[in-house]
Length: 271
Ligand SMILES: NC(=O)c1ccc[n+]([C@@H]2O[C@H](COP(=O)([O-])OP(=O)(O)OC[C@H]3O[C@@H](n4cnc5c(N)ncnc54)[C@H](OP(=O)(O)O)[C@@H]3O)[C@@H](O)[C@H]2O)c1
Image (tube, rainbow, N blue to C red; front, side, top):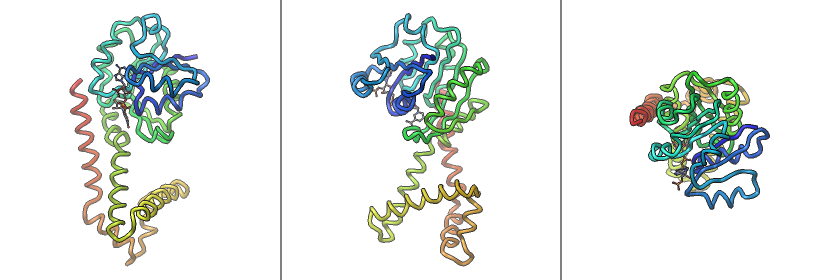
């Protein structure tokens, strides 16, 4: 049985914990001083310990995995409470906190030597996320397996080679759902401008988006291949795609990723 401590149980923390509760070989403890009562209520029938402050030394010595899931702005304060504990020899310290580097944790939690940064994304809430990982070289195969197993419960997992890649993943998949929702909204607003009602626009766009993704997955064809297949010469799709290309859609998307990546680098430097 592996004992997991989750520090911070807001949007992402609770998405993770809800999917982990049925795992056989793990037990969970949550620390969240501000949502203590809400969590107690929500999880009252589950076998889970909920604390309203950092665990005691005696409790700390029992954990195999700690995952920090608080907002970056309060990470330094929160970590203050975890600095001087004696820990299990093989403990792994994980963090989903955007922009906080492995070194940030290494400097503070001196009695651990295995550290992992994890970048999940919001569809983890419906177990369709993708989580990117990067670790320091001390991570054992056994702990890697355990972390991978935990996050496979909320979607796919990808292990990256270095921390700059995780900042890039933050810009692509971490922030990605935000771009997709913005695009969906733009599609819906455009359909409304053409004269469809709000509901009709939502139906037209969501069905078109979902259907296109399913089509791509089932046929295993590349998106550019499918686009050519639909865009008959001289037809309507070709006219629409031409407009996207004339307005440099590729450049807009690349610049979007770069803006987020640059921001992630700035946030990382603040450690
Ligand atoms: N949401 C996403 O899509 C996403 C994706 C990838 C990574 N992340 C990262 O995940 C982290 C958490 O994001 P989130 O959206 O889940 O934020 P959130 O909803 O604000 O969750 C953080 C939780 O930690 C609690 N907290 C505050 N002080 C604490 C303490 N001393 N000890 C334990 N818990 C404490 C907060 O309580 P209060 O709210 O009452 O302060 C809140 O419940 C962030 O660093 C973010 O970068 C989020």
